[in-house]
Length: 371
Image (cartoon, rainbow, N blue to C red; front, side, top):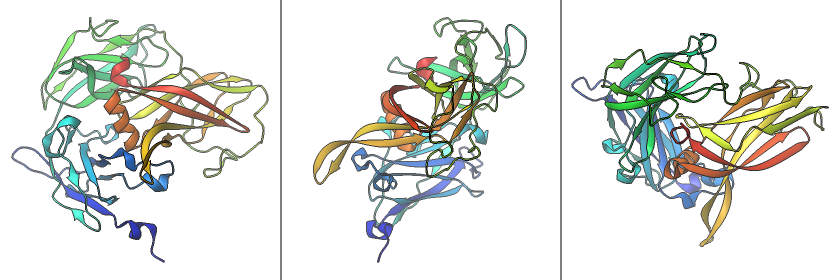
């Protein structure tokens, strides 16, 4: 009996990513994602939409192949994810930077569309050190974003960086221009360079590709919602949990332990992680798994209807009692596109603890919209 993939006669996209300019050197480690232009292909079950998007990472020769795609038209995006520490300006196929201008790529059944290449230009970088204004200690895992106003009058963040244990951060892959740099960290007030409290007052920082603009430091004032210390929210399953069947362990919640959302406005970072803050109150640690779902229009037997689609699921978390922890939920390509199209997105969040499931409606907001 033929497999489902064989029956669907899937296709793919391939190409090579090189550095723009005279060298044309291959670029390894670039994330290439193909995302369908037809969201009516999305369905409620993963098996119905798993071939409407796909990603691949370029190898040592700069080559990539995104396989197992529906015969359909796709947007293709080339970007350097923050963990790669590569300094290239993200772009869509044929050097476009706006989805409305992007050239779509056709995929045919049982064929790979070749030569979907990209030439990436090195970007500008902004770097600095973040410390606590109260103690002088470095601030770890703070978010620094380079902000600018686009042609529509909207504030956007072409690049963000995360501070390390030393407080040092670097924002990479920026087009040349002037930026206002915003900073946000749990337990601190939102701040803007240089010592400002609003984006309107922020001092402009000039960045010129491919150069580094250093010394954009900031001392953050204590305030805002607290976060848990490192290690209080684990991305690894704890003892007694089951990855495929729920949380396992006791069939009822631990005594004197309650897990709840710290807020219903969920910030989404530059690398498309939904940062969900949850409170664990009581005398026992909490365990949970979080799932984000969104309603989208699909066509079933020729009729248009709404279905609920999962766009991200967390690992099983273990959170210390009395702490507020931030859970990171990686949005899938469908969720990323919906959020980028709308700027903010109303979704359903299912918070599952042993013996209990809680459903809430929350709003996802891009990091640039909040700063």
